[in-house]
View 1 (cartoon, rainbow, N blue to C red):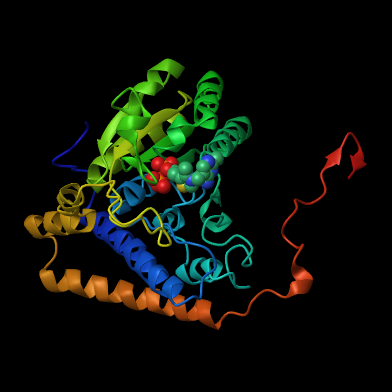
View 2 (tube, helix red, strand yellow):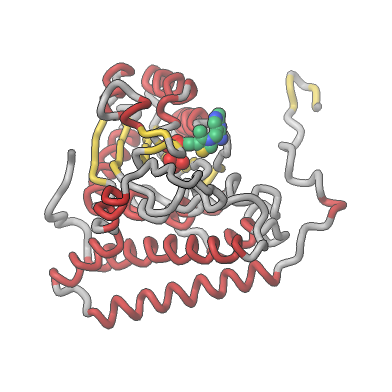
Length: 340
Ligand SMILES: Cc1ncc(C[n+]2csc(CCOP(=O)(O)OP(=O)(O)O)c2C)c(N)n1
């Protein structure tokens, strides 16, 4: 497990920006829960609460124009990469001002302005897309990398294995980033795999596999920076496994049968002691980089920013039914001189 006590090259300014982005994810998801409970959001909500350090640590190790793919639990990924919050929230509500014009929703967001190519409600569905994005970067020699987020459950699905194999053969600059929260819905990763660590699978495909403490944002940032450097210098992909935990249920509509406790209460409480936002706040305070008041001001500022985003979304109209088929299909692609 890679952990680091002191990361000299991450400035105080960057650490505060990390804290801001983690808070944005937390407040955004908390408001999404409330708005969904009021019946204003179609479908369910899968939050990233507990995963914020893994997400932001990775996102801040790449550039805005680097590619990124996500999965069903992916409001946080575009936020981590710097998306505007209003159009993201509007997308959750299916509104016209959403990043996909309201046609993607919570589980199929894409925000090209920050390199986010899209998410998928199909488990492991976007992993091959990140191999394609990496291949495109390699062929165009544009120096970009593709950062691919997925869960531990996805690492047991076929597309994961096929994608790692192909990426390694073609040496695509893809960073496979597994947010291992220990469960696929209620199915424990311990029961779903005969090995302890997903990172061990990397060796079978011929790429480095790294385990990192997903609650430690600086450790995540350091590991992903190394994987990005490796990708940009033509050495190919890396598999990063961040050990993390979701503090909420699998989704907000999930109601487990009474008495069916798949996660021991003590286990949940133990992980809550390692809240990534509190851990970075403590580190900043210990370093003397911020005061308690400055941290509180930062959180208030973020909460206000999210509130503006929610209002923007609620004020946005629903898409006009006449536009139902717009932005759904790619523009016609000429094939052997024929346009179809
Ligand atoms: C191909 C496919 N199979 C099953 C499902 C149902 N499903 C939705 S989320 C999920 C669990 C995914 O777990 P993981 O990849 O660990 O992500 P997490 O939800 O823990 O973040 C499953 C099985 C699905 N959406 N797609």
